[in-house]
Image: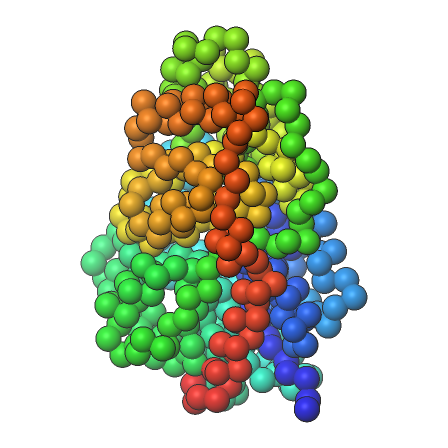
Length: 426
C-alpha cells in the first residue's frame, strides 16, 4: 500500500513560538509517526513576537518536509533587515491596529500570504503525490488558499478550527458588509471542505447552527492537547508555594483580578513563601500594575521560554493558574494552555466563563474553578491550595481524563478524518 501524503498549509509554524503553533506542530509530528508523508507550506523568515527553534526538533528523523514561502509582507521585510523579534504593542494600540486591519483586510491581514502560499503549494502538488490537504485557522485566509487549490486540483481538504471564524470572540466587524462578507467566504469554504475539525462541542454546535448545509458527521471534535514527549524532565520544587502562568495577556485575558486576589490572600497569610511565576509575555503594563500593588517582589518573570523549558516550569510548580475573561462566544473558546497544564498533572486554579473550557477544567479532577472576575473566590482558591500544599495533600487529576488529551492519540483521530475526506468529493 502506497504511503499517504498530506499537504499542510500553516502560516503560524516553527520557528515561530507561542501557543498558535502548537496544535499544527504536534499534528505534523504524530501524523508522520502514524505513517503519513507530511509536506508543510509555511512562511519564510518573518518578524514575530516570539521564536522557539527547538520546536523544529520534533521533525528530525521523520517524513516531514517543510517548504517556506518568500514573502513580501511588512513582517518579512523587517526580518530581512535583521529585526525578526518585535515587541507586542500596548493594548490600546493592538486593539486599534486590529480595528484598522479588520476594515481593510477580509478575512484577515494574512491574506497577502495566500498568493505566495498557493504558488508554492502548486509546485509541491506537482512534485509529490499529495492525497489530501489540511489547514488550521486562524488565520482564516489560509482556508481560502486551500479552497482555491482544491478547485484547481480536485484534492480534498480538511479545515481545522482552533477558534471561530465568523463570530470570533476577539473580532468585531466595522460594518454589516464586513460581517456578511466573512460569513459568505466561510460558507463557501465549508461547502467545499471534505471534513471540518473543531476543538470542542460548543464550537461544533455553533458551526452547524450557522451553516445548515453541514451534517452532524461533517464536523469532528479533536480537542486541544499535550505532547507526552515534552514532560517528565523536571520534578516538584517544594521550597516555595509556586503559582505559575504560561502564555500571554491580551484583551479580556488579564492578570488584574488574579493580582487583586493574591493581595487579598497575602493579607491573611503574610508569611506564605509565595512565588508568582510567569513564562511568556507578561507585558510592561502588567508588571507596572503588580508593582503598584506591592506584588513585584513575589513575581519571577521568565520571559518567553522554549517549549520544553516552559513545560518543566509547570512541573516544578505547586499550582497552575489560568484565566479567560467574559466575552462574546466565550463558551466556544478552547485555550491550548489548559491542556498543556493537564499534561503536567498539577492542581489548576482556573478563572473561566461558562463554556467548553470551564467544563473540561471541572472534569480534570484537580481543579478549583471560579468566575474570571470573582476576586474573593480566586483568593479563597489560592488559600485552599496553600493549606493543602503545607499538608502535602495537593490533589491529583483523573488519569482517564488526562489521557484523552494526549496529542499522539489525537493525531490518529486526525488521520482518520483525513482518510475520510479522501473518500468524498470536495
